[in-house]
Structure formats: structure tokens, C-alpha cells
Image 1 (cartoon, rainbow, N blue to C red):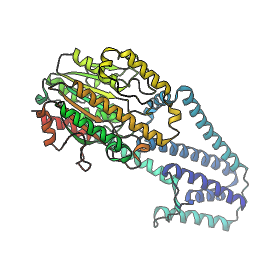
Image 2: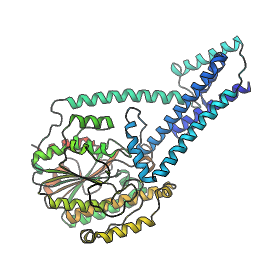
Image 3: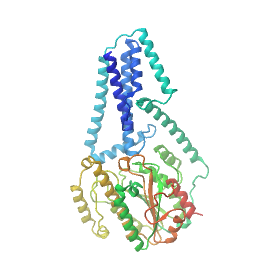
Image 4: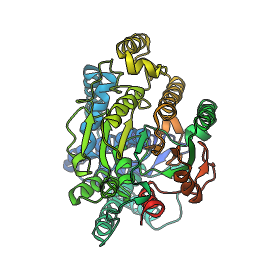
Length: 523
């Protein structure tokens, strides 16, 4: 009898651990029904079958625990569950980001330790189960166990709602991912049908923006949480108010709104592709399909309007053939941007330098120019935090600025130290975003040309550890120009004058921005 109780207890602990990984809490739950079912199976089946069943149970639990752990990490990073059909292709990107933040040696040590703990746990549980000796059951007890198993299944599948202290964590995890795979297949099929629709967002000229530079700047992890969550708003809102006054004094008109990003916490390229294409690019498969079909983008619209297309992508350290498929005439990455200063953990170069480098390119190109910039100083791990340098120093004496940045990096906390304190992480996120906004609006104040349109927006909300659970995916968008006639159509379309959108303003999908430009400035 004690052996039976030990098996039931061990299975119940493992399954409740599975629930804890998925939900982050247990509440009042103290019994996982699967533990009862599996114990019953061990008692019912013949002695010669039990070793195979034990191996199957242990292997299945190990896989479920691994899946639940990956689910938990994905939820923490991206605010959603892991999707087996879509996310395996992100392994290289995830490994690259970890090595940039932690270093190759530390990343390999963490990975090896995690795998060792997993396999050790599997081995220990298997050994414990194999050592148990279960009594031979009488036919009456067999019948009772069959009835128990059948009754339990009937309650779960056809009966009333389970009491709150009962749970089926393994079944819930399996069914959730099964439905997820079905939904993914349907969404992918719907996306393919949408792309095949004749005339869907075909390239159109934008005569209302002809002969004007149009600059599109994505600010990393800039979400509405920064504006309306008091942990961050006490820093960010004064920054916006200050620059709103400064920009108005310099003759710049501005309006703001909110867009709903397709992602949270990462995969910025999906947000970029969504805004450029006018399609809701929510997964890597959607992104790859869009590229393979050569869906038209804003690059094609501006090419028809007479613009040259330019991309500034300082985060990219590898070749980027996708950029050509997106329609850029010229692409600058970390490989061919002449930055000689220190790298800043994951951030290859600070935003202020990126803006200054872009300005040199803008001056070197004949107008009009359509440019996309990916601003990355507000990307995790948010250390070190740089001050805004004097713009004139960046123009005339960059080496002294680089030396200053190098000294600040040496004194700054390492990511490993910083991320041991989540309150400090949130504080550094605020400071990094404050820097990114100061660099972007500082560029506008100093360099924005009379006829140009500058569009600044967040690519996505930061990870849930910053926003909290169940945060929206909304991001701010700001449009700026010294020509009021360019900003007025945005205000007429529902944007709010100034740099702070209304908290209760209508939601607009990021994919709707390209059609909005078509309506406001097209034929």
C-alpha cells in the first residue's frame, strides 16, 4: 500500500510542478487527476508491462516539463506561448542574443547545466519508480480501479466542471498546444489566401509626399506602458513634454497616436514588415511567405513616388538578403557603418551615433529619400546607460565621444549583475528608453529639414517582466514635420496634436499605417 501512495505522491508532485511552470501559481489545487489515472494503470497492467509503462510515463513527463519550461520562458520574453510550428526557426537568433548579453562561455554553461538537471531528474525518477514493488491485485481491486479510471475520465470529458482543487495540467498543456497548431494552420492558410487576393495593397505612388524626405524610425521596446504605467511615466512623460515645447519653439509640428504591434518582447522584424507591407505579419512563417511572394511594401510606394530607399540596421551583424526583397536600394548594417566606439553588450552602437550617421547619408543622397532606421539603444539588457553627447562633438570630434562611452561601459553594471534585481532592470529600461527618445527628438530638433516627414514609433512593447501580465500590444507613434500641411491630415484622421496620444484613443493596427498613407497622400 505504501508503494502505491509513494507513486501517487511522486506523480502528483511532478504534475503540479508542470502546472506551476505553466500558470506561475498553484492556488488551491492539490491533486492532478493524471496522477490517479497513471497510478491506476500501473496497478491494472500485468507485471511484465510495468517497466515499459514506467519508461513511457517518465519520458512523457520529461517532455511535458521541457515544453512547459519553454512555454514559461517564451511567455516571459514575448508574452505568448511557445509555438512548435513557428518558433524552432528562432533558435539561432535566441542563441545569438544570449551570447551577446551573457557571453558564449556563460551561455554554454547555463545550457549544459539546464540539460544536465533535466536528464538527471529523468534518471532519478525512473530509478525510483523501477525500485518500487507493487502488490499483485485481486480481481475485485482491478475492477475497482477500472471503475475509478473510467469514472474519472467521464467526469473530465463529459461531466460537470472540476472543483478548483482538482486539475489536469498534462491534459491541459497537450490540448492547448493541439488547438494552437490547428489555429496556426488556419491562420497560415488565411494569410496565403489574403496574399493571393488580386490587387491587395498593390504599390501606389504617394504624390502628397513627393519631393520630401520621409524618415521612419523604429524605437526598440517603446510601448504605451512607458506612457501610462507610473513606474515609467514619471520619467518618460516629462521627457516628452519637454521636447514637445522645444520642438514647437523650433517650428516643428507634431501629432501622436497608438498602433497595435503584432508582437511583444521581441521579433522586431515582424513589426517592421507589418508596417511596411500593410499585412499583419504575426509569425516567422508569415514573414517568409511575404518575402517569397515579394509582396509590395512602402519601399515600392515611395519608389513609384520618386524616392530612393535606404535602411539603417545597426543591430545586424550578418548579411541581410531579406532587405533586398523588402525593396531597399541601399542597406547599412553594423558591418558597413563606420562606428569605431565600444560595443554596448547587445547594442552594437548607440542611437545618437546611428542618427548622426544617417544624417551624413541623407546629406550625401539627392532628395527625396525614404529611410528606415532601427534604433536599438533601448534593447535589453539596458546597460550601460549613456548620456546624450553634444551633437557638435559627434560632427567634429567623434573620438573623444567614443572614449567617454568606453569609460562609461567599463564602470557600468554587467548584464549578469543587473538582471539579478528586477527592480533595477525596470529602472534601467526607463533610462535606456529615455535616452533613445532624447536621441530621436534631439535629431529632429537639430536636423529635420523643412519639407521632411519624420515618423517615430515603437516596434513592440517590452517583455512582460517590464509591462506586467496581460498588457496590451499598443505602441506610440509620432509624426513630425516643419510643414504643418503634412501633419494636419494625421490629426484629421484621429491623431492627437503633440507627443502624447490619448490613453483611450481608438486602436489602429500597425498594418493599417500603410493604407492610411495611401488614403492621406495617395491619388
